[in-house]
Amino acid sequence: MASPLARRSLLLHGLALGLLALQLALTDRSQILFWGAVALVGLAGLKLRESRRPPDLRRAALAELIAVGVLAVMNPELGPSLLQAVTALVVLGALLSQEAGGRTSLRQLLSRSLLLAVAALPLLVLLFLLLPRLGPLWSLPGATAGRTGLSDQLDPGSIASLVQDPSPALRVSPLSGSIPPPAQRYWRVLVLDRFDGRRWSSLATPDLRQPAPPPPAQGAPWQLWVVEPSPVPQLPWSGAGLPLTPGIRTGEAGELIGPGPGGERRRYTLGRATGPSAWRTRPPLPQELRLPRGSNPRLEQLAEQWGRTLPPAGRLEAAARFFQGGSFRYTLQPGRLPQQAPLDAFLFESRAGFCEHYAGSFTALMRAAGLPARVVLGYQGGEWVGDAGGTSGYLDVRQRDAHAWSEVWLEGQGWVAVDPTSWVAPNRIAAGVQGGLAGQLDDLRRLGQTLPWLRQLEQGWTRLDLAWTRWVLQFDGRSQNGLMDRWLGRWRQWQGAVLLGGLAVALVPAVLLLSRRDQGDRRDGLRRQLERSLARLGRLGLAPEPGESLEAFFRRCSLQVPELAEALTALAQRYQELRFAPTSRPPTPPRSLGAADRNLVRALRQLSPGAIKQSNP
Image 1 (spheres, helix red, strand yellow):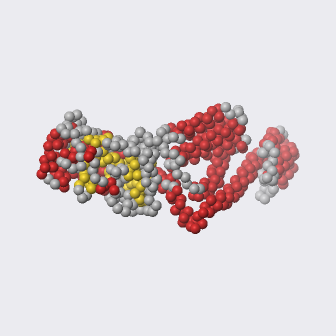
Image 2 (image 1 turned 180 degrees about the vertical axis):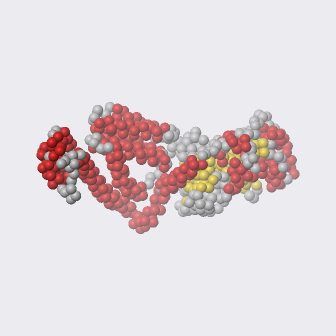
Image 3 (image 1 turned 120 degrees about the vertical axis):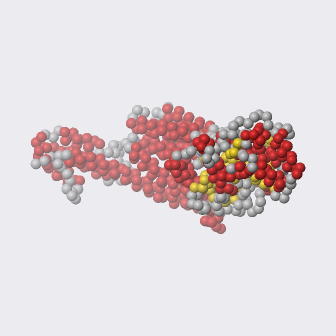
């Protein structure tokens, strides 16, 4: 395989393997298909190394294309899909180079590969729209690690570190209605109901194997959510709405639990709820009132006094007055708390902390005062990107928007959200973390920032990614059924026949386009070869007259330079043979003017000086 054809084809195959290896490096290894894709890429590389004949290269290309399909199943987002498309084009280029005999340029290979992709596009669209959608054939195991995000425990200082990360956390696209104002943008993820005197955690782990109820048969999608990889299985949401994506359910504490590993990006839609969510009225459990006695004695003494003298609502008001009038300070650098009585040290000594300090200490105060309470972890805020008040944009929530707040049980009201951070730093809720840290230069310098021009590029890409998610990735069986009901109506049972008929119709222009392009490429190539030969004659002052045919021009040249007559006659005959050969029976090799053109070059070199003078009087 030392010919130029083999070298070019091998180079393209090597590039395809490199692109596949890059995609594998960016793929979550916890997915069940990952190692299958690794095996396919490895087999393609081994087959490529031992290739000695064209069929070996074709088998390697087949393994590469199958690997592209497996990666498309694992990574269907817009960015990976574009990379997969480029990989498929490179493999097609390698196959075309093999079949063309190595006489095509890289530009021609790219042009023909794109032509094949365009010809196949109508077929792909028909299959996408009409081929019945199948549900998942298996459930993937949950992952325990993600790229970044919230933890399932709340330890003082954990969120303060997370808010220094400017990377994206989630995007919300309103499909109907609008996004609430900044002060109401609370996106709950985790509910923590266990307290050991310092650290908050969840007493129960959600059972990911529990089947989710089927989505409601009616109701239009309300919001589209795209969540970046996270180490927890719970999904962000506002706490209101109905999950429409199969496999997603709401937990008893108001957590949204979905399938799939947290180490990969997840997408889901919510519909509007017709009434209050059931989790808001679920009576408190014993652990939501439990407090380790003696762990923070000063906190317990203050709260027990409220519990003896004040009604439940009055205890909330007393806590608000305590935080608002206690010279508390919102900061990213609160310092370390002692191991013994850490909340006492925060509430009565340092009084400097971040949202987890305020949420954790307030929740402990409420439990000590006799009110069931729990900590909620999630995100608060987000930047709206798009038309103000419209539905054409999206809400961009970053890791730096991570937040903690509380929920308290009140008889007759259910679980009521309370954010003690808003009592200390109201600008944090209205204007984000930067607003809460206004005037604190040291803290502001610790926040991760993104360059403005890079931010604009990222926003534009996110728009495209959300559109891809909405119209392609979210096109499930439910969406297809609605589309077919609108298109076919009472003829719905003929969906299969419509698919076959559409494929047959789409094949006709594809075949015509490819056949015409093949014929045009062959003829255009001959024309370029002929023009190179004519350019050699032009250097002797021999040029065709306007309207002069090729035969007439060559006869005139033969009369002026008789030494060229034999070479010109052979060149004209060869060009006519190739130019007007029937397209159904391609000419036998060589398929070029190569030999005739070389004869002309030799004849030109052997011209005597007198002949050249004679040709240019």
